[in-house]
Image (cartoon, rainbow, N blue to C red; front, side, top):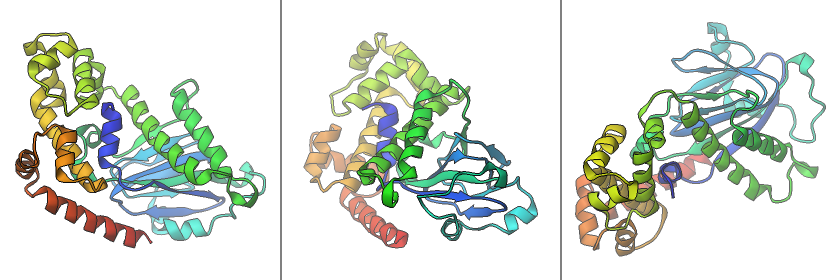
Length: 322
Protein backbone atom coordinates (compact mmCIF):
# COMPACT_ATOMS: atom_id res chain seq x y z
CA UNK A 1 0.00 0.00 0.00
CA UNK A 2 0.97 3.66 -0.39
CA UNK A 3 0.01 6.76 1.56
CA UNK A 4 -2.89 7.84 -0.66
CA UNK A 5 -4.35 4.32 -0.89
CA UNK A 6 -4.04 3.82 2.86
CA UNK A 7 -5.47 7.24 3.64
CA UNK A 8 -8.57 6.45 1.58
CA UNK A 9 -8.92 2.87 2.87
CA UNK A 10 -8.75 4.01 6.49
CA UNK A 11 -11.83 6.24 6.17
CA UNK A 12 -13.93 4.55 3.48
CA UNK A 13 -17.18 3.04 4.73
CA UNK A 14 -19.52 1.14 2.43
CA UNK A 15 -19.91 1.83 -1.27
CA UNK A 16 -20.17 5.19 -3.07
CA UNK A 17 -23.54 6.25 -4.40
CA UNK A 18 -24.33 8.33 -7.46
CA UNK A 19 -27.18 9.78 -9.48
CA UNK A 20 -27.16 10.69 -13.14
CA UNK A 21 -29.19 13.85 -13.60
CA UNK A 22 -30.16 15.91 -16.62
CA UNK A 23 -32.10 19.16 -16.50
CA UNK A 24 -32.63 22.30 -18.52
CA UNK A 25 -33.95 25.82 -18.10
CA UNK A 26 -34.12 27.35 -14.62
CA UNK A 27 -33.25 24.95 -11.81
CA UNK A 28 -31.59 24.91 -8.41
CA UNK A 29 -30.93 22.06 -5.94
CA UNK A 30 -29.65 21.99 -2.37
CA UNK A 31 -27.35 19.34 -0.83
CA UNK A 32 -27.04 19.63 2.94
CA UNK A 33 -23.74 19.03 4.79
CA UNK A 34 -22.85 15.35 4.73
CA UNK A 35 -20.65 13.09 6.86
CA UNK A 36 -18.54 12.00 3.92
CA UNK A 37 -17.38 13.51 0.63
CA UNK A 38 -19.53 14.74 -2.23
CA UNK A 39 -18.62 15.03 -5.90
CA UNK A 40 -20.01 16.24 -9.20
CA UNK A 41 -18.84 15.48 -12.71
CA UNK A 42 -20.32 17.56 -15.52
CA UNK A 43 -20.81 15.34 -18.54
CA UNK A 44 -22.43 17.92 -20.83
CA UNK A 45 -23.41 21.57 -20.58
CA UNK A 46 -22.51 23.90 -17.73
CA UNK A 47 -23.79 24.98 -14.32
CA UNK A 48 -22.75 26.65 -11.05
CA UNK A 49 -21.80 25.27 -7.67
CA UNK A 50 -22.50 27.53 -4.69
CA UNK A 51 -20.68 26.20 -1.58
CA UNK A 52 -21.82 27.24 1.89
CA UNK A 53 -19.62 30.13 2.95
CA UNK A 54 -17.69 30.19 -0.34
CA UNK A 55 -17.69 31.86 -3.72
CA UNK A 56 -19.69 30.50 -6.69
CA UNK A 57 -17.76 28.15 -8.99
CA UNK A 58 -18.54 27.83 -12.70
CA UNK A 59 -18.50 24.23 -13.94
CA UNK A 60 -18.18 23.23 -17.58
CA UNK A 61 -18.31 20.00 -19.53
CA UNK A 62 -15.66 17.58 -18.30
CA UNK A 63 -15.11 19.41 -15.00
CA UNK A 64 -14.92 17.41 -11.78
CA UNK A 65 -15.39 18.81 -8.30
CA UNK A 66 -14.80 17.10 -4.94
CA UNK A 67 -16.16 18.33 -1.60
CA UNK A 68 -13.97 16.14 0.65
CA UNK A 69 -15.46 17.30 3.95
CA UNK A 70 -19.11 17.09 2.95
CA UNK A 71 -19.64 20.86 2.68
CA UNK A 72 -23.25 21.83 2.07
CA UNK A 73 -23.86 23.47 -1.28
CA UNK A 74 -26.29 24.42 -4.01
CA UNK A 75 -26.00 23.49 -7.68
CA UNK A 76 -27.87 25.73 -10.07
CA UNK A 77 -28.19 27.05 -13.59
CA UNK A 78 -26.91 30.52 -12.56
CA UNK A 79 -24.56 32.18 -10.03
CA UNK A 80 -25.57 32.75 -6.43
CA UNK A 81 -27.96 35.42 -5.30
CA UNK A 82 -30.60 35.43 -2.60
CA UNK A 83 -33.33 34.45 -5.03
CA UNK A 84 -31.32 31.52 -6.40
CA UNK A 85 -30.60 30.06 -2.98
CA UNK A 86 -34.17 30.65 -1.78
CA UNK A 87 -35.69 28.58 -4.57
CA UNK A 88 -33.36 25.60 -4.08
CA UNK A 89 -35.15 22.30 -3.58
CA UNK A 90 -33.67 19.27 -1.78
CA UNK A 91 -31.45 17.29 -4.11
CA UNK A 92 -33.41 14.02 -3.78
CA UNK A 93 -36.65 15.72 -4.81
CA UNK A 94 -34.90 17.65 -7.58
CA UNK A 95 -33.30 14.50 -8.98
CA UNK A 96 -36.73 12.90 -9.20
CA UNK A 97 -37.84 15.81 -11.39
CA UNK A 98 -35.09 15.39 -13.97
CA UNK A 99 -35.66 14.15 -17.47
CA UNK A 100 -36.18 10.39 -17.81
CA UNK A 101 -33.29 8.00 -17.46
CA UNK A 102 -31.88 6.43 -20.67
CA UNK A 103 -32.91 6.26 -23.40
CA UNK A 104 -32.80 10.07 -23.51
CA UNK A 105 -33.61 12.54 -26.29
CA UNK A 106 -30.72 14.23 -28.07
CA UNK A 107 -28.85 16.74 -25.94
CA UNK A 108 -29.94 20.29 -26.81
CA UNK A 109 -27.55 23.07 -25.76
CA UNK A 110 -30.08 25.72 -26.87
CA UNK A 111 -32.16 25.19 -23.72
CA UNK A 112 -29.10 25.27 -21.41
CA UNK A 113 -29.36 21.61 -20.52
CA UNK A 114 -26.78 20.10 -18.22
CA UNK A 115 -26.05 16.44 -17.66
CA UNK A 116 -23.97 15.38 -14.69
CA UNK A 117 -23.06 12.64 -12.29
CA UNK A 118 -23.62 13.60 -8.66
CA UNK A 119 -22.61 11.36 -5.79
CA UNK A 120 -21.23 10.74 -2.33
CA UNK A 121 -18.52 8.70 -0.67
CA UNK A 122 -19.28 7.52 2.86
CA UNK A 123 -16.28 8.36 5.04
CA UNK A 124 -15.42 7.94 8.71
CA UNK A 125 -13.75 11.27 9.44
CA UNK A 126 -13.04 10.41 13.07
CA UNK A 127 -9.58 9.02 12.25
CA UNK A 128 -8.87 10.66 8.90
CA UNK A 129 -5.29 10.64 7.69
CA UNK A 130 -3.87 14.20 7.80
CA UNK A 131 -3.46 14.07 4.02
CA UNK A 132 -7.25 13.95 3.64
CA UNK A 133 -7.81 16.40 6.50
CA UNK A 134 -5.63 18.90 4.62
CA UNK A 135 -7.78 18.86 1.50
CA UNK A 136 -9.60 22.19 1.03
CA UNK A 137 -13.39 22.37 1.36
CA UNK A 138 -13.72 22.28 -2.43
CA UNK A 139 -11.37 20.81 -5.05
CA UNK A 140 -12.26 22.03 -8.54
CA UNK A 141 -10.51 20.22 -11.38
CA UNK A 142 -11.39 21.98 -14.65
CA UNK A 143 -11.26 20.15 -17.95
CA UNK A 144 -8.13 21.72 -19.39
CA UNK A 145 -6.50 20.10 -22.41
CA UNK A 146 -3.53 17.89 -21.60
CA UNK A 147 -3.85 18.09 -17.81
CA UNK A 148 -4.54 14.99 -15.70
CA UNK A 149 -5.17 12.51 -18.52
CA UNK A 150 -6.02 9.72 -16.04
CA UNK A 151 -8.78 11.84 -14.50
CA UNK A 152 -10.13 12.73 -17.93
CA UNK A 153 -10.15 9.04 -18.89
CA UNK A 154 -12.04 8.15 -15.70
CA UNK A 155 -14.61 10.87 -16.40
CA UNK A 156 -15.08 9.55 -19.96
CA UNK A 157 -15.49 5.99 -18.70
CA UNK A 158 -18.02 7.10 -16.11
CA UNK A 159 -19.94 9.04 -18.73
CA UNK A 160 -20.15 5.95 -20.92
CA UNK A 161 -21.14 3.71 -18.03
CA UNK A 162 -23.96 5.91 -16.77
CA UNK A 163 -25.29 6.46 -20.29
CA UNK A 164 -26.65 2.94 -19.98
CA UNK A 165 -27.85 0.55 -22.60
CA UNK A 166 -31.18 -1.13 -23.34
CA UNK A 167 -33.21 -0.93 -20.16
CA UNK A 168 -30.88 1.74 -18.72
CA UNK A 169 -28.17 -0.61 -17.39
CA UNK A 170 -25.11 -2.01 -19.11
CA UNK A 171 -24.12 -5.61 -18.30
CA UNK A 172 -21.87 -5.66 -15.25
CA UNK A 173 -22.66 -2.07 -14.25
CA UNK A 174 -23.27 -3.06 -10.62
CA UNK A 175 -19.56 -3.90 -10.40
CA UNK A 176 -18.16 -1.39 -12.88
CA UNK A 177 -19.79 1.78 -11.54
CA UNK A 178 -18.62 1.56 -7.89
CA UNK A 179 -15.13 0.64 -9.11
CA UNK A 180 -15.05 3.63 -11.45
CA UNK A 181 -16.26 5.90 -8.66
CA UNK A 182 -13.42 4.64 -6.45
CA UNK A 183 -11.02 5.35 -9.30
CA UNK A 184 -12.45 8.84 -9.68
CA UNK A 185 -11.76 9.59 -6.00
CA UNK A 186 -8.13 8.47 -6.32
CA UNK A 187 -7.58 10.53 -9.47
CA UNK A 188 -9.17 13.64 -7.97
CA UNK A 189 -6.87 13.44 -4.93
CA UNK A 190 -3.85 12.75 -7.16
CA UNK A 191 -4.72 15.75 -9.30
CA UNK A 192 -4.99 17.97 -6.23
CA UNK A 193 -1.60 16.77 -5.02
CA UNK A 194 -0.07 17.52 -8.43
CA UNK A 195 -1.60 21.01 -8.66
CA UNK A 196 -1.19 22.12 -5.04
CA UNK A 197 1.42 24.82 -4.55
CA UNK A 198 1.41 24.64 -0.76
CA UNK A 199 0.37 22.44 2.11
CA UNK A 200 2.11 19.79 4.16
CA UNK A 201 1.34 16.56 2.32
CA UNK A 202 2.09 17.57 -1.27
CA UNK A 203 5.49 18.59 0.10
CA UNK A 204 5.94 15.39 2.09
CA UNK A 205 5.14 13.15 -0.86
CA UNK A 206 7.32 15.28 -3.13
CA UNK A 207 10.37 14.98 -0.86
CA UNK A 208 12.36 11.88 -1.86
CA UNK A 209 13.59 11.09 1.66
CA UNK A 210 10.23 11.51 3.42
CA UNK A 211 8.37 9.78 0.59
CA UNK A 212 10.71 6.78 0.75
CA UNK A 213 10.21 6.46 4.50
CA UNK A 214 6.44 6.77 4.15
CA UNK A 215 6.38 4.11 1.42
CA UNK A 216 8.31 1.74 3.68
CA UNK A 217 6.04 2.31 6.69
CA UNK A 218 2.85 1.95 4.67
CA UNK A 219 4.10 -1.06 2.73
CA UNK A 220 4.71 -3.04 5.92
CA UNK A 221 3.52 -1.27 9.10
CA UNK A 222 3.87 -4.50 11.11
CA UNK A 223 7.63 -4.75 10.47
CA UNK A 224 9.92 -4.12 13.47
CA UNK A 225 10.91 -0.67 12.30
CA UNK A 226 13.51 1.43 14.09
CA UNK A 227 14.85 4.86 13.23
CA UNK A 228 18.04 3.21 12.02
CA UNK A 229 16.28 0.75 9.71
CA UNK A 230 14.01 3.44 8.32
CA UNK A 231 16.92 5.81 7.69
CA UNK A 232 18.73 3.04 5.83
CA UNK A 233 15.59 2.43 3.74
CA UNK A 234 15.51 6.14 2.85
CA UNK A 235 19.25 6.24 2.16
CA UNK A 236 20.11 8.98 4.66
CA UNK A 237 21.42 9.34 8.21
CA UNK A 238 19.08 9.02 11.15
CA UNK A 239 19.30 12.75 12.07
CA UNK A 240 18.57 13.75 8.46
CA UNK A 241 15.54 11.49 8.31
CA UNK A 242 14.23 12.69 11.67
CA UNK A 243 14.61 16.35 10.69
CA UNK A 244 13.01 16.12 7.25
CA UNK A 245 10.26 13.65 8.17
CA UNK A 246 9.18 15.60 11.26
CA UNK A 247 9.22 18.94 9.47
CA UNK A 248 7.08 17.65 6.60
CA UNK A 249 4.58 15.35 8.38
CA UNK A 250 4.36 16.97 11.81
CA UNK A 251 5.43 13.78 13.61
CA UNK A 252 8.77 12.01 14.18
CA UNK A 253 9.01 8.74 12.22
CA UNK A 254 8.32 6.37 15.12
CA UNK A 255 5.46 8.52 16.44
CA UNK A 256 3.92 8.47 12.96
CA UNK A 257 4.33 4.69 12.82
CA UNK A 258 2.58 4.23 16.18
CA UNK A 259 -0.27 6.51 15.13
CA UNK A 260 -0.65 4.74 11.78
CA UNK A 261 -0.61 1.26 13.35
CA UNK A 262 -3.41 2.26 15.72
CA UNK A 263 -5.36 3.92 12.90
CA UNK A 264 -5.09 0.71 10.88
CA UNK A 265 -6.16 -1.31 13.92
CA UNK A 266 -9.24 0.91 14.25
CA UNK A 267 -10.13 0.35 10.59
CA UNK A 268 -9.72 -3.44 10.96
CA UNK A 269 -11.90 -3.45 14.07
CA UNK A 270 -14.53 -1.45 12.19
CA UNK A 271 -14.46 -3.40 8.93
CA UNK A 272 -13.56 -7.01 9.80
CA UNK A 273 -14.60 -9.68 12.30
CA UNK A 274 -10.94 -10.61 12.93
CA UNK A 275 -10.14 -11.43 16.56
CA UNK A 276 -8.02 -8.95 18.48
CA UNK A 277 -4.95 -11.21 18.35
CA UNK A 278 -5.08 -11.25 14.53
CA UNK A 279 -5.54 -7.48 14.38
CA UNK A 280 -2.56 -7.03 16.72
CA UNK A 281 -0.33 -9.17 14.49
CA UNK A 282 -1.38 -7.36 11.34
CA UNK A 283 -0.46 -3.94 12.73
CA UNK A 284 2.77 -4.89 14.50
CA UNK A 285 1.85 -5.54 18.14
CA UNK A 286 3.19 -8.60 19.89
CA UNK A 287 0.01 -9.40 21.80
CA UNK A 288 -3.63 -8.35 22.18
CA UNK A 289 -2.71 -6.85 25.56
CA UNK A 290 -0.02 -4.62 24.02
CA UNK A 291 -2.45 -3.42 21.34
CA UNK A 292 -5.24 -2.83 23.87
CA UNK A 293 -2.96 -0.75 26.09
CA UNK A 294 -1.79 1.45 23.19
CA UNK A 295 -5.28 1.63 21.69
CA UNK A 296 -6.84 2.84 24.92
CA UNK A 297 -4.14 5.48 25.34
CA UNK A 298 -4.78 6.77 21.81
CA UNK A 299 -8.57 6.44 21.55
CA UNK A 300 -9.69 6.62 25.17
CA UNK A 301 -11.60 3.34 24.86
CA UNK A 302 -10.94 -0.38 24.52
CA UNK A 303 -10.77 -2.13 21.13
CA UNK A 304 -13.90 -4.14 21.99
CA UNK A 305 -15.92 -1.06 22.89
CA UNK A 306 -14.66 0.74 19.79
CA UNK A 307 -15.77 -2.15 17.56
CA UNK A 308 -19.18 -2.31 19.23
CA UNK A 309 -19.75 1.45 18.93
CA UNK A 310 -18.72 1.52 15.28
CA UNK A 311 -21.02 -1.39 14.48
CA UNK A 312 -23.94 0.42 16.11
CA UNK A 313 -23.23 3.59 14.12
CA UNK A 314 -22.92 1.69 10.86
CA UNK A 315 -26.30 0.09 11.45
CA UNK A 316 -27.89 3.44 12.19
CA UNK A 317 -26.32 4.96 9.08
CA UNK A 318 -27.57 2.11 6.89
CA UNK A 319 -31.07 2.41 8.32
CA UNK A 320 -31.04 6.18 7.75
CA UNK A 321 -29.81 5.87 4.15
CA UNK A 322 -32.76 3.63 3.34
